[in-house]
Image (cartoon, rainbow, N blue to C red; front, side, top):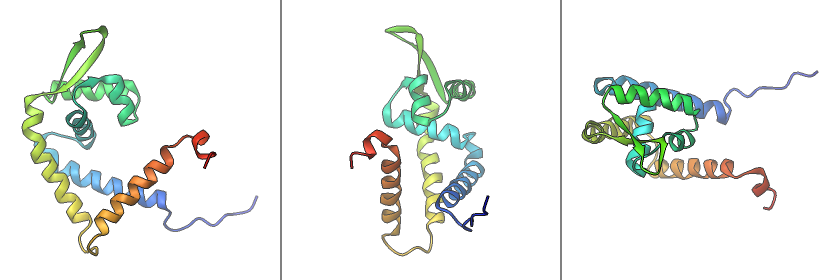
Length: 152
């Protein structure tokens, strides 16, 4: 077996490290709101898409349903979300943002925007848009199934 050269900075590690740094900064600044970065992600999806079943939240957040259930449990206890039975299926619970969430969302968004501004400070004009477009393209490229990719 031969040793392969491992690059100092690979795309995957850089993306992961940047995400972790943003998450840590958000956690520190949003602590006064009582909102974690995982909870913020869930809130953003509820605010964008409206109330939805826990199973759908698990799909969107790409985490196990039991993990979403625990996250929603903590958020419900803290007053961030409410669960209601689905009118068409009693087994399904719909998760909705509460008035507390709606009141705090602007402040949390301001915190997130401030962190992004900090993260991108000193970059040339237009870089933010280029970076955002590039990340969207990476996500799109890797969201396609292998069956779809071979037709290209």
